[in-house]
Image (cartoon, rainbow, N blue to C red; front, side, top):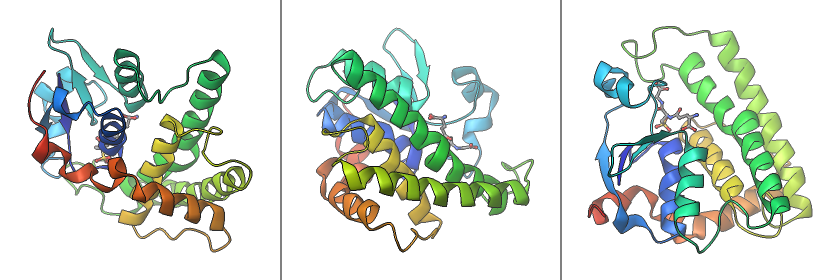
Length: 218
Ligand code: GTS
């Protein structure tokens, strides 16, 4: 399997963390794509992923799977432990709900802020920008942080009692916020404490060096 990837990227981090949690790193070959140069918007890359985003998983038979949630679900179902997307119908439902909320209310909001209200990837990639929309999404992300803070006051992980894909997506949102110096609201101490614990996980701590270590295709 190949993963088209960018080591520093918050979205690629979601798949990197999932792979590390499941100790599947050695089964993939990471193919770096330069976002700053706009390599993800070339016709060749758009033929792999219509949305022109990373990461993309390419299976050995050439099948392409884009979207972090879909990739994580595929990898999780391919191999067993630990399960990141839930075992029971209830767990699966709750994890997918919280994962989608983590995208909508935090990670995607921060990403829109990046692409619209900051220089983003530069003028040759950011062909349309709307700063007002970007700033609105920044505020949305701050509200999202407050929401997840409230959730984490009542339970140890984003979707309940176990670490899951939903935690990974909130982690990615916090990574993106950190890169852009978007401050976590002062009152969000449960979110901050949870994030500190998440950063101790080897999958999170070592995510950027993973491609240097694991380039053996399965
Ligand atoms: N919904 C997609 C997913 O979940 O996979 C979003 C993926 C995404 O936005 N990826 C970023 C990207 O390709 C990668 S990174 O910003 O985290 O490095 N951005 C480039 C662009 O031009 O939007």
